[in-house]
Structures are given as structure tokens and as C-alpha cells.
Length: 142
Image 1 (cartoon, rainbow, N blue to C red):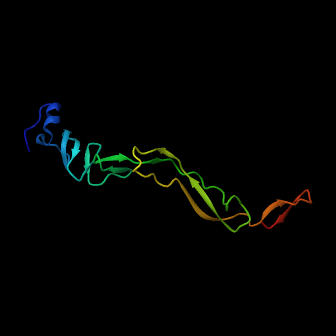
Image 2 (spheres, rainbow, N blue to C red; image 1 turned 90 degrees about the horizontal axis):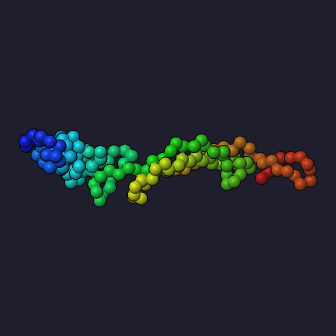
Image 3 (spheres, rainbow, N blue to C red; image 1 turned 90 degrees about the vertical axis):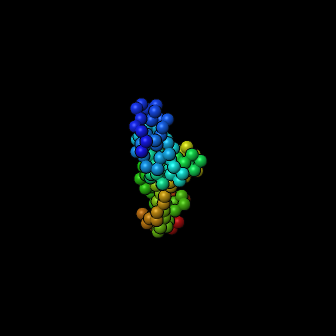
């Protein structure tokens, strides 16, 4: 290891020669904060990684870890339906969604799924429809 640095300015200029403590760092701002990683490593919050942490994606142009897409909480599952109908079938699909809270700085970092569906059993196998000749409702197959 090289000579000890006296001031922050000297630390910035001398990088590794001042004893940068960050593994796989090529150039340090201070002993504990990297500004450029060695080839094959990604810079993230002053440290070097061979893979970016969860929620971040590698930006190959700069060899940094960019923020990934941030999504909100899932909604409640919607009603069981098939097409636009909530009756008339034995099985349908229910769907839930979530919104994108923060888009990534580059389109190369994909957002996770924002809608998902699952199979469900419909509550009413038969639909209630008004019969044109009566004032009440009768059960009628859809």
C-alpha cells in the first residue's frame, strides 16, 4: 500500500495509492467510496459488484447499476368473470393489477408484471335476465 493521504483532495487524486478499502475499485473518492470499478464490475453507491443488487440493473455503457422499475402494491382480486360476464359459465378469470410508481431511467430495464390473472369458479352458473313478457325476473340459461 502507498503513503497515507492527508487531505480529501489528496485522497481524490491518489485513489488506490492511498489505500482504497473498496474491493475491485480502480479509483476512489475516499478510502470508503469508489468512483470507478475495475473492468467487469459495476459501480453502485460507492462499491463494486460483479452483479447489481436486487432492484437494480446493469448499465453496460457506464458499468453502473441503474435503478430498476418501482411498482406499487397489488390491488385486491377482481370479480370472477369470463369476457364481460360474471355468470353463465362454470369457470372464469379474476385479475389484479398494480401501477408503476417510478419508471426506470432507461427503457432497457424492464418493469415486472403489472397485471396477473388466475382461474376461478364463477358464483352464478346461470344468469338472471328480465323476460320481456313479465315484470319480474326468471332464471334463464345464458
